[in-house]
Image (cartoon, rainbow, N blue to C red; front, top):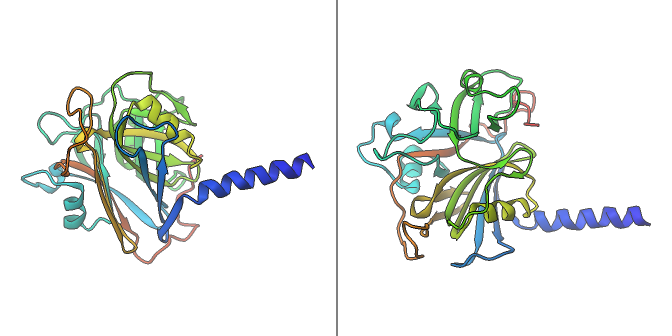
Length: 284
């Protein structure tokens, strides 16, 4: 009897979590969640676009690659370069072009500077025994940036939010901001995460870990007005941008997307789903 009740409880929890996902098309789902502990501003909504790499290709693109004369908004990047979804790829330097942290993308080096950030998103593996997409922790044994540079075509170093597997690594601090983040779930799916309502990152991490989305790792991409997410998939489109950031823009009044130099975008793979035997194995 106790075993039956336990199984029913697990099924109920799973159903509740799954009910928050809306299928947009094959391999792309939209999640709309509300923080359990609300923000001081806005509706406390957390938007997550869940992308299955069996159906979608993840791409890093920078102004230094395309030779754009000006930065573009997430929506403009999507329209101009045929992306179905776009999010920030990370913070950038005062030149409004160079990524803060190491960034290589398909042979192009936007930033050769290796920071002390411990989170690296790697995708486009060069060998068949690696997952297509994975967020690595540089302070883990047998993980090094040098190795990842050789193993993957694209490597993006950013501030860490959540260390594998599911460890909140952000200390309690009073600073808060709108947030764009990159996550990975237990099935190796790509998570584009955005909230306009500001949170401290410790609080935000706890909210993400309690959503029931099987999140295993996450990294910070951008905060404040520059934090963006845009998609146009399955007949639905959404453009989101942040506003609040402590000591920079302490209000919810921003009404426009700010141009950004570096983005992560997704495109649907030609021919639909990648055959299982050809898809790189899921991350552990």
